[in-house]
Length: 338
Ligand code: PEP
Ligand code: MN
Image 1 (cartoon, rainbow, N blue to C red):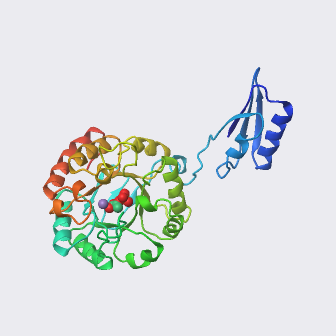
Image 2: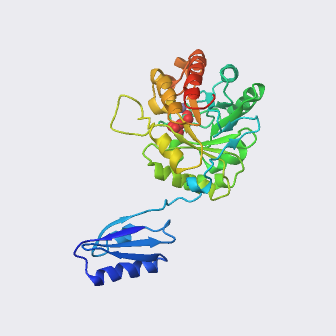
Image 3: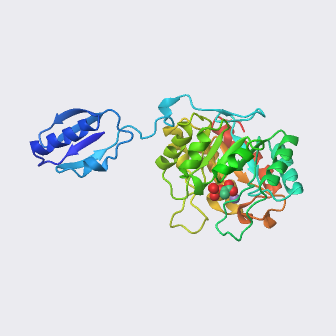
């Protein structure tokens, strides 16, 4: 941490700040310039609330130098994390992974037709919600465990891995036999009890960015899972809430290279929730691959207009197959395969 003192700070004020830093276990290195004193603090600053130094008399600014997250930081694994799945697919390697499926599992016909399409398109993962976090309690809430049974069967028949959302701790155990990857939804990004519990599980977790969360908050949330010993965490940019109303959310493409720089964890982009519009999914998917995303998660449905949830942002199966082919050229242009 760096504490910059005000130009007129007195020796007493400087000494008081040094004492407070040392009390917090930080080693202080003082630089006295012609006009200003700078205090550099080295030590365990990750858990410190820096505001407590900012409010001391004579202090101008306090800056954090090292990241408040440790296990998620790029330095922990400079080579990057590759999350591997039993079906042979991986997320974080050279190949950009495709995760696709309906917003919600609705029927056997729907999920089998969708799974076959994901396979044809070269995807390795079938997504689909069985427990749905809907804005209104009167909207379709998902099929629950019978939905997961259908997903498992359809994924198995097509060599795909299953990704599905877990909304609460009590669902983890019953979901274990059916899912290869637990999705934590945007609304639960800061459900710290759920995150801690997923740290105890030995299955990958796809953690979505909260609708109003900063990149740092997303990384701190991942730290809850990592610190439990579960290192298979995949981060997901899915759009954030801004003042813009032209799209459902604002897809923060820049979060992708930012995350790739700050963390070793793989980054997935969700252009479906990111835009909320079928006609915007393909351009944002392409932009995400160009920006360095390790995977895409896309909502598709054989009868997209009639989907029980998120119909407006859901692609028809043929649209997805066409997109996958187009994405191959983008991936090649940035040195990846797909
Ligand atoms: C979903 O993937 O269907 C979903 C509900 O996503 P999010 O949590 O990003 O809104
Ligand atoms: Mn959805």
